[in-house]
Every structure is written in C-alpha cells, then in structure tokens.
Length: 498
Image (cartoon, rainbow, N blue to C red; front, top):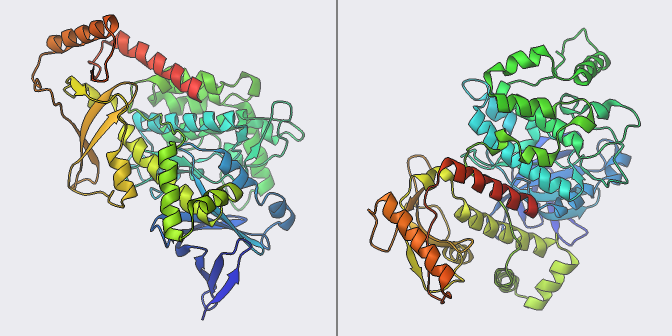
C-alpha cells in the first residue's frame, strides 16, 4: 500500500510505507538516491510526461536545526532562480508538502570532481584538463558574482561533471549561498574548513565574493597536485577543535615552501595563478577580472566559454503551445500560470523544455580551435542573411532529436558567418565527430588561393552595397600574433557580456 499526500501546490506525494521511501512527487517518479547531507538528501527522478531525468533535493524541516532550515528554506531556490549559466546547475521546479521542500534541478551524470581526480592514474589532472574546468569555473563565478551571489561552499564535491564525456562541469549545492551588496557584506561564517578563506575564521569579519576566489585556488591546487593545500590529519587522539585550530594556522599562513615544492611540476603560469588566489589578505587577492586576463587561463585550450541567451519569441511560443496542447488548456492560461508560478508544475515543464533547447543550441555553437585549424574552409553562397539553427531545434520539438549513427546536417550562422557541419555520433567512443564540408566545389584550393579569395571578398563587400544573397567566408587560419589579438577581442566581448 502507498500513502498519498497533497502538496500546497496541488501536486501529490506518494510514499511507500513499507520501505518508507518516496515513489512519486508531483509529476516525478523517484529512481534512486544520489547523496545525503546534513539537512537534505538528493534523489534521481524522471519526469513522467517528458521522460527527462532530473535531480530532486529533499529538505525536511523536521530534521536538523529546524530554525535555521526554516529561515533559509527558500533561499537556495531564490538564488538558483537568479542564475542562468551553462556551468551552474539549473533550477526547474519547487514543490512544498507540509514540512518537506523539494527542489527539482538539472541532473549531472558524470560524478563529482573529487572522485574523478582520484580515479586518474596519476591521482591528479593534467594541466590542459584542469584549465578546461578552471575556465568554466571562472566564467560561472563571474556570472554568479555579477548577480550578487556568493556560493560560500565551493569545493570539489560540489563541482560535478555534466556527463560521461567529462568535458563540462556544473556547480551545485547552493544551500549555503547568499546574496551580498557592496554596502551590505556577508557576516555568517560557514562552508568547508579546508576550502574556507582566512577571513571566514575571524568572528565579526565581513566579506564578499573574494571568499569564492580563495576556494577556487584550493580547487585548482587540488586538480593539478592531487591533494588539498591545507590539511590536518584526522586521528583518534586529536579533537575536532584542535584539528580546526591547526588548520586555521595553516590557512592564515598561506602557501609555504611545502606547497611550492609540490607545485614545481606545474607550469610557471599555473603556479602564479594559484599563488595569487591563495593570498591570506582579501584585499591583495586576485580579482575575477584579473583572472580572466591571466596568461594561464588564456593559454591555448579547447574552447569552453559558453553563453546562453534568452529564448526567442518564436521558441517561447512553440513551447507554450506544446504545453497547452499536452495539458489541454489554452495558451493564455499557460502564459498566466508561468507568470504566477515560474517554478510551479507548468513552469517546471516549460523550464525543462527551454533548458534542453538551450543545450542543443549551445552544442551546435561549440567550435574548438583544434578542429578549425585542421579543417578546409570554402566560400558559400547564402540566400538569406537571417539563417539560424533550425534543424536541431525542429528535431527537438518533434521529439526526433536523439543520438544515432545517422549524420545530421546543421546550418549555423553566428556573427555573419555561415558554416555547414555534418555531425555523426561515434558508436565506438560515444563521442561526437564534427566533419566540416564545403559546397562551392573548390575543396582542394591552396592556402594562398583561399587567402586571396578572402581578401577579394572583404574588398568587394566594403566597396559595394550588400544584397540579400551574400558571400560569407569562414576565417582562414591566422598567424600567432593574429590569434593572440583575436583572443583579446574575444575576452573583451566575454567581459562585456558577463
């Protein structure tokens, strides 16, 4: 037998008394537990209508410190609702049932960063992989801090890998996060001691986003060295108070010759960044803008600064129409419900579909410099200057977007560039292979011919008015100086956007 409770939002929570485990919450069916913390536990679930897997954080007010939990019960949802970044876990829906609060979020299936590092043969990550993750972390922190949010518990256990490919990361667990202002800094001292900045151990000390940057330094050290910079061994003879005192001494001292010796195998730029992050004085610590300018962050690597724009009006209306049809209500009622409860039952369906559409679009825009350098480019005649990604989106709306061994042709335009790609899923490794093809008939032209063609194209477009049928060229591989200049322009655009 099962017991059904009605939530405040009208959803049902189905519990199996024999096992004392959840079966259903709203439109979600529970699958398996993922983890447990002091005040909450997380379970994997699936949306019974969309068939999309999610993570549900279950917070029970009756457990733990009731006053603290009640006071901050909805703060995590409030913080997550402010954030919309590819490297930050996405909030889909909130459900309240009596003393239990449910947060439905995006599910990351690649495991946490700490476990991933331990599984490496060397017990640490190579610098290129560490940089790949670090760049995503920096972009996420930039977005987070621009919204006035401080995470306050950034650690490797709260950084998870998006999927089995382990290329993209997600910051999770915003239970200790809060909103700050320059004229109203934070005062509560919390977080994991091994990752905590020195100012967090000083009673009455006020602080801001700089504590997250110290934690970033600890994470970066852990990724490249394979262990944390500040540790106090646990044994049965040392009390928790004594361990904390010894740890505070290490953290207040900062990096010493012990850590410097451990970092001798890393590059000079990497050591420099870690040293500037793990500075005990918050005023002297490197800022987020300086990190974006740092040579180690800007070094040649796989492109992983991802951006998300708001949905277009047509995409929004398409999703609203789908929901109205599925729920058998009119479009006006769906729009009204989205305004009234953005993270309600209908809002959850909308948020999941919109996020999946974002992910499809983002994956189509991801161009790695390595693939571009090894590709042959060709001029293409385009009949419409307003061409956008449509194949992937249409497949998603029709329910036909899925991984298969069939090539899927996608036309992409970004910043007046049109590219044709053939995407094929590798059955051997489960990875995506991007095959660039050209359609003008001159695939074997020499480098000089392509460069000359590009110059002619630029001259003709400058001296004459552009018609609706324009010739667009993909950029020819550049010299080292040109690439450095482009990276600076790209960085400037990134800073302006975030």
